[in-house]
Length: 188
Image (cartoon, rainbow, N blue to C red; front, side, top):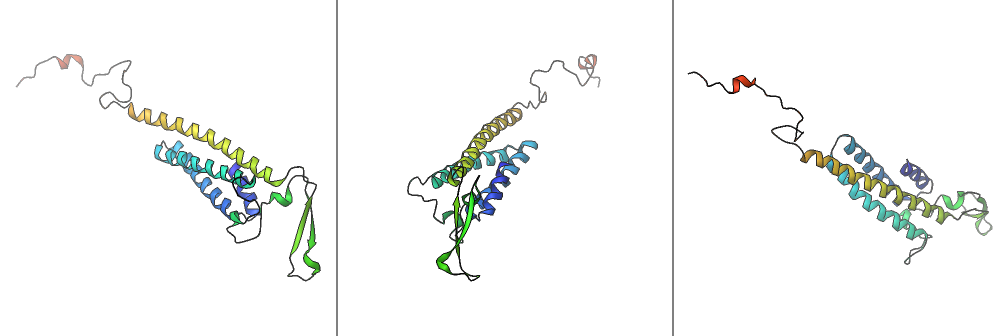
């Protein structure tokens, strides 16, 4: 649900790189759930590997919005230089009031305008950082749970006894033939 929420806000901000990452994340989460329900450890392994990639992606987003290591939140990196849009939260954050200011006094329909945003209770980059941190927290919990499920499934597969079935020490033993037939010599 959290990934779907993030997908919606990235669509609203035309953030194409996060849109693609969220799309793959949603697909892999569905694959992981299917693997858990159907006892398919390979699907769950795909989920665990993707979770590591997803954590790295969210660490990158946190660094991007905090402008760590030469990254700039004002660059068009997340939009693939297709559009000049930025985070939806930059204009629509909690308490934000946006005002449109026409550029250089032009008033025709094709003129671009700037949006002045004031009164925000929290700056948009911190909202994005909170989203990324929450995604990391959820992903780490999912990773731990997936590792547990994989260990349980593979343990069940390894405990199979071809002679006695799944239970290595049955509480009772059922003979296929009555015991008096087992000790009688066969007549020819």
